[in-house]
Length: 365
Image 1 (tube, rainbow, N blue to C red):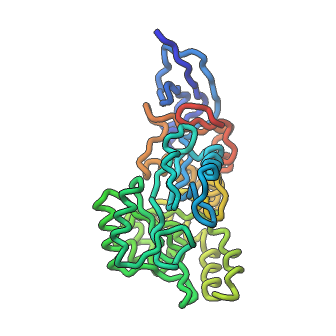
Image 2: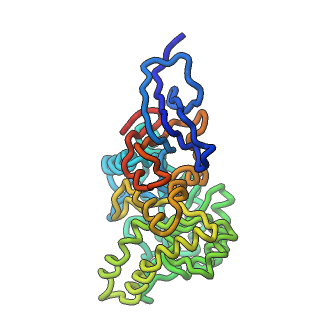
Image 3: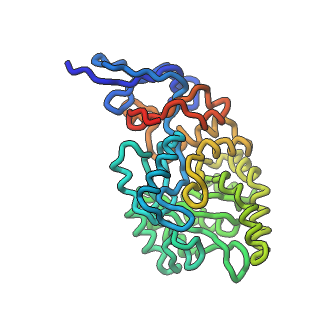
């Protein structure tokens, strides 16, 4: 019988949020998880601690910086930064870069792509999006649905320079047709939304998720909850709103004041959404102007907003993976996990200090 090298993870293996989902050990054999001790093991390496599924950043941009697409070596550094911080699954919420080469690398995080952003002409950050008009929206959504990994990303609102403030980018009938087409092709749809006025149309049109969701008001929360529309608040990004507002005061004072108000109520917005039963997931918006590797900081921000620590951990582990259709610490699943010295369920700050990072069964950090 041929003997195999295996990894033995022991201590507390957190396969889910409940106490009856805590196990004492798991084994990694040929890159996959097993809860049965292999009989042909050799060179057993043991790692002890509190084990979680690899963290999820549900709003991240690998291959993108503040100016647009980046070379592959820069994208690689971004992905490695996320990996070393324990983020092993990324939903890339829009990028002009082709990052399919990452799929061939077993040392880099797994990526679920939403294709390239789709924005209204001159209504988004330069070099990021397809910039089109409403009559083109269905065709571009179909294109990105076919190119992505089951997601499409719209820009739902942005500053209108004539108004001097945030406003919705698309008429109701355009988003209805576009979302219907994405769903026909088997893709879910999400949208960047800072402000209030695009949300009702998007949700009633059948959208699946809203990014940032700073404009989510008390009158809209029941609609989100009824339709099961998730939010990814990206609070580490919303923290930059005052700085952005200061830069726009002279030219767009109305917009700057709006951004400050959205920032001021950000924690109440997230807590009210959570209390109403709206699914909330961890996402950082890394890759534009924000650094990578901030999933733990975003989980801590959710706790600051009033979400219980266990639920904040779930928002970047078990619940997030289930929402994205990817396994956690399941029998036979790829061994993508992070081991900590302490229990992150009682203090989410533990997530920022992984002891070991295991990706595809290999200790990579």
